[in-house]
Image (cartoon, rainbow, N blue to C red; front, side, top):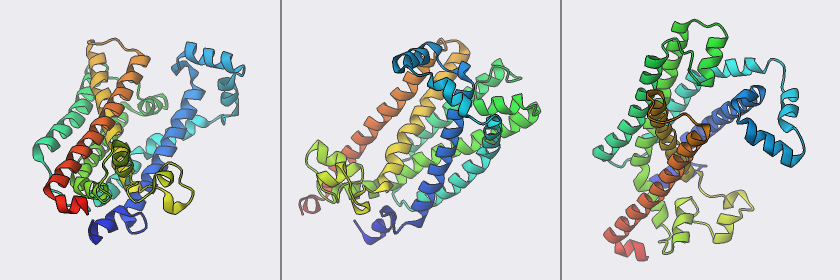
Length: 302
């Protein structure tokens, strides 16, 4: 691995990587906390049988208790989060663009286009059938669209907000896909640094632990023993991108009437997309690693 590649991979040397991870992490935490509070405050959106059984097993009505602990105007946080989505998407997109440009590998245009079509196609089809079946968005389930409608914002404003937000996040998803393809050579070089022979050694290297012992990788006790966070940008983001994109295709099929809307099935679709993509991601890295090893047998054995 060259010195230029090390300046991209290592946290201390790559200010762009630090900024992207910090900003995106805080944004996801903010949105996650907000959605969690929203679900607790509106328990009608939850599966009543599942939560009732869980509370019965625990012997404590924790949902009711959480609802009591929430501030009375928690809906304001939900509304402010809706307002902030375009800004969060724009900032993340700017930082991602800088990170993507640190990768130097040529894009394979066929694979790039296929991934882009899957991401954009699912989102566009989902939005198109939503508008076709509910022009006034009365049946829209997106919690941030709902809060804007319920707060008496005009329909044109809601459409404009949704179009801007969706455009930014679709571009962000495509940027993550392109970023992985641009950075794939650097990722493979870090994996090749220790020439892993077993599946476990490869998994350790693919998750940023090629420079660590097995104990350090599994049980880091010092900051210096934490795996390289650079690898987790792609390891986590790529499965989420395609898991969410698969769900949007499924949501469009729900609107069209090809499948019945079931919350449990929706969760299965997302989890299936995430874990299937994660397996394909690791298999792709393994194939690229083996190809690099075959092309440079001397470096692989050194």
